[in-house]
Structures are given as C-alpha cells and as structure tokens.
Length: 304
Image 1 (tube, rainbow, N blue to C red):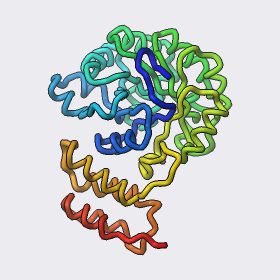
Image 2 (image 1 turned 180 degrees about the vertical axis):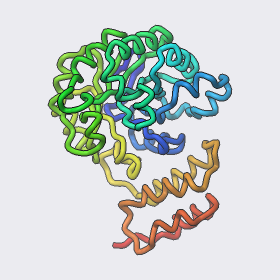
Image 3 (image 1 turned 90 degrees about the vertical axis):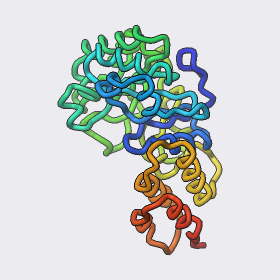
C-alpha cells in the first residue's frame, strides 16, 4: 500500500486529533498497529512563521512514528505553500484540512468552508503540490449539507490538482459528528478516483474498520475519536489497559517537550474509560506531578 512513494505498512490510519495527538499518544498508537500517523491539525499562518528549529520542536516527530502525515489548515494558497515548505523536511506526507467545522476557522474560509469555493480549493491544492516533492493529500467531508453533497466532484478536483490521496469523513459539515456516516458516498468517491481513498467516521473497533473497508472499497480506514480512549483500537486482540497507560506515561516522560501533568492526567482519564474500577477516575485530574500519576495508575485495581 502506497501514498505517492510512501509505503504504508497496513490499512489503519490514526486521525488528526486536536489537543490529543501529542507525540507519546501517536507513538502508542503506532506501537498498537496504526500504519499511518497524522499529527494534529496545524494552522498554516502560525507554522509558516517559525524557524526550522522551532518547527522541529513543535512537530516533535520521532523516527518510530513514521510514516507521518502533517496536517495543515489555512485558506491562502501562498501561506499554505510556505507552510508546506516549513514542514516538508519533517513530514512524509502533507495534508490539507478541508473538513474542520470549528466556527473561527469557517469564518476565515478554512476547513469545510472550502467545500463551498471549489476554484479556491483547486488553486490551494495545486500550489501545495507544486511547493514540495512530498505527497500532498486532502481530508474532506462529503459536502457542506444534504442539499450540497459534492464529495465526488471535490475528490476529482483535488486529484486533478495534484493530491495523491483523499481522506473522506462520511458526514456533511452541518451534521458535525451526529448521525450515521454515509458510506455509500465514500464508495462512490472511491470508484471515481485513481488515487488512494481513506474512509473515516464511526469506527469504534478493529472489526468496524475492516467492515468499513469492505463496504466502501477504500484503500485505508482512519480512526479518530475512539483512539482517544483506546490507542489499541488498531489491533484485533484485547490488551492490558493498565499496562498501556503506564507505557503512555513512559513515552511521555521520554519524548514529550511539555512535561505537563495536566496533559498526562487527561490521557490517563480518557484511557481508563473501559477499565472497570471502584475508584473515581476523575480524581486523576487532581494529581499535580507525573510520578504521582504513575503511582496512582499502579495502585488501581480492576473489578472482576
């Protein structure tokens, strides 16, 4: 399996997760079988102004994570081309976000707003593809709303503009994260394109992922929100949750720049969702150092 010249070892992909995809989380997903890792969404305006050293530190991509897609968001082609050049040394693939539904980005004409301005989207993708030798991809939704489902048109447009893969979240922008994903549209998009298509939406287990691949015929499947709670969702077998959490803390202490107990506590709390215990796991947010969080996890007893 390839995107451009980049070999992907399997068909499971970690989604870009804002505020979640720190290096330790990405590495844990990789260890659990994610074939392709996305960074969280990065504002092109901000990254394009950083020095090489600052970009390297900001991305904090480790060799064991590769291949890695760096995802950018923006609405100005010149800024995005500059951002591509800022991250290309560290990225294996560079992605444009055309699916974000955060209001402040929509107002700036970014993310899913580009689904309503196809000439602009085409010129942006072309400028990004021309700015680098690395593969450029896009992540879209199937349309702005149910009256304007244009995923097939958008897919063909970005392919013609130079994108080497397309990720499709199977909802419209105005659906946000509610309602079922439309896998029929994803299947139609895949049938019309020659590039790899990544199916995204409503995958909450390894078997769900395989089912979505089968239904849509897509090349890859992307998992997002479920990975926040289960970075091991990319594997078939059950895991020792406590061991996974301790591994996350170990990776965080070794590789993360921020050293934030608050960030560690958040991840530990999310990953304890399926760990049955009589403890009130919300209490992890009151712990103020990483070594104490580790002790707290070690002491947790699972209900039989």
